[in-house]
Amino acid sequence: MPKNENQRRLGRWPAFATRLSCVLASLLLAGCFAIYSPAQVPHEFSTSPIFEEEFDKPTLDLSKWSFRGLGKRDDCIVDPNAVSVANGVARIRIYSVKTGDKLTNYCGAISTQSSFLHTYGYWQAAVRFGYQPGMQCSFWIQSPSIGRYIGDPARSGVEIDVFEHVSRETKPDGFDHAVHWDGYQPLLHKSMAKDGQYPSLDDGKFHVFSLAWTPQNLTFYIDGKESWTLSGSDAGISQIAEYIILDTELPHADRGPAGGYGPLGATQNAYFDIDYVRVYPLKAAGQASSR
Image (cartoon, rainbow, N blue to C red; front, side):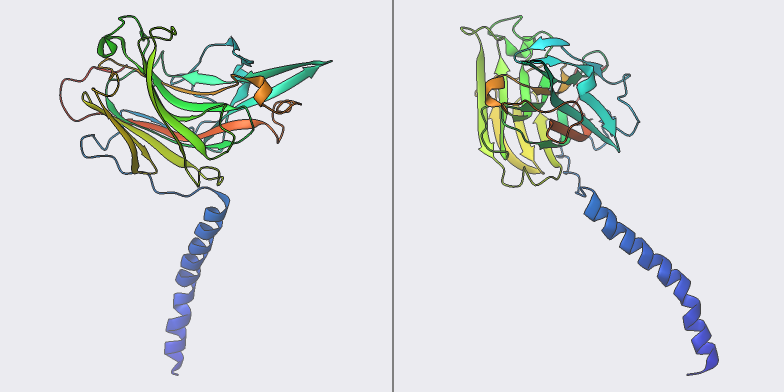
């Protein structure tokens, strides 16, 4: 082979080595982090989000989120310390503190009630959770006036559970979607729910749960595939602005581990991780404004 050909080929090596190192780095990252394609936005909605949270700051962004319902809720105390942000992920834990013979459980909740409310849209979050018996965790949308006008959910708003793992679930791959309206009093409250199991939900990777909310329908998706749809004849559909809630709950401590969930930061804590939250507005005119 002529000398100049050898030199030419050797001259290609730095560029090839650079490309090879990039490929190897990508493969290494794929092994360390959850890599997934974002679910496609349905055609009725803008592809530019009106709300976007990537949790890329070192702490919770309090211009977007506020702590919700601090104090006792069911069998846990809602505590800001249960919420943390690191490496682009928000983590909401359930943890326990033992004082003598007394075991106290703590959970966390954040919302956009004071910063972002919107009507209709494609609401989406990438989530995963560390399963422990008795835990409950949710990505849901709430009306600030649910139940105010009984029999008129369009005017009062509704609760929409886009993703919920509930305390009665005995398996880590269980979930539900749900809609609640007409408040929470036993004789007035109405709801529709779909319980299911998603085989890969407990694989340690993020999964994308989404809701397409229009004036006529509520359509739920898991990893981009339609999982449930409701019309106004099936359930109440809100026609007013609503806000996002992310939380952990402990409705029944007796369903949890006898010794609790460990102190804050312990490996046995039950937790709910959120990689991102996005809301894409409906293209049609006439929707209520957000703030």
